[in-house]
Amino acid sequence: NILDVAVGEDAPVNWVTDWCQLRALIDEYNKREPLAQIPTNIVDIRHDFAHGRVISKTTMEPLTLLRFSKPKGATTVVLERKFSLNIEWMREQVELVYKAMDFVDQTTAWVLRKRRILQGQVSIVPIFHR
Image 1: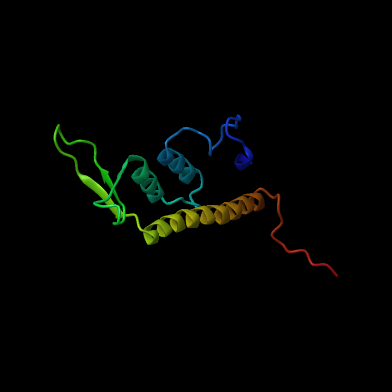
Image 2: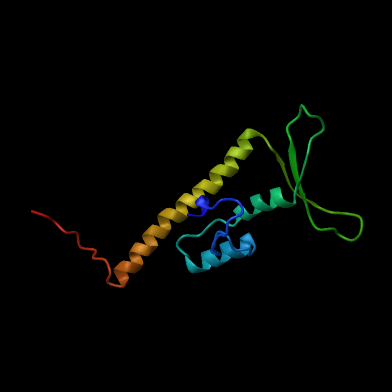
């Protein structure tokens, strides 16, 4: 279990530890599992925190997350995303990620069972005991 690895210890390279970009990882998963698609807007949440800027007018106001485009020429950028980092917004983002994880877990289990049925490894006829 990857959660059992301590800081400083080696971990195996797998879909969790791979250094590929998150969008590429999700795209590859979605290509392999068309019935268990991960919503790609999860990547935007990650990009917002990784590439955005958090600011506030005062220490008494909520923080605002801003994400800008790459420069257009030498002097301007476009404001692409803007969010007030209030508790409700944070909960919505966490819920979105958990829903995607739960959906993938449930759908992947269904897809694996369907594959086993199609390969004749699992019977679809229920077994009744007397």
